[in-house]
Image 1 (cartoon, one colour):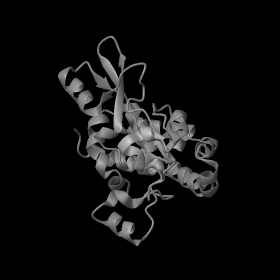
Image 2 (cartoon, one colour):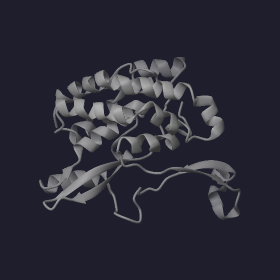
Image 3 (tube, one colour):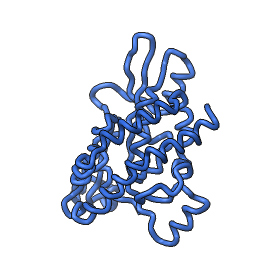
Image 4 (tube, helix red, strand yellow):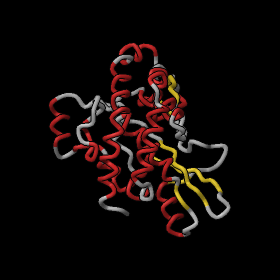
Length: 242
């Protein structure tokens, strides 16, 4: 059900929405004895690699756990909650349901009074997750409702975000309904049809030939539906504030 080349398309979508991102790159790994014990697993294969620390060489990023500690230790430290929301809207648009705490790194900006931590999503292994078939369909009904898959619509936006609800309640607890509406509108305006088409073109040509119609159609539909689905999810989060 996973799309092996989805991560190559996400970079353009993230850039359009002003979202920090990693830069995965595909490589052909030769059958080299230097690989040692890993040779049978990666030799003569196409591999998708990205930096563990997306901003290596500039500012060191921190894990989600460390950011939580920093926020609890000093009230002058904050997370950029609107940036988190933009990143989460992208998750919903691309159908990436696996955004647990370890799927993020955080960079820091010095405000003069404390640190402002901004999110850098990574590990896009569930983007464009295509859960067709009877078995996955039955699992998505119960007990794994987040496996509803990358369709033209959201079956249930609350259950799609089941794994992320605690992260969202902690990292977006100061973003009110008006801010959600504004940010959703800005996100939709930035993710134009041409941006979507160009993003999908970043996949290898033979893969693009297979996906050039259905994936952009799904992305455009899900983008447009965020006006209602996004606010439905906001109301779900707002019922229980961390």
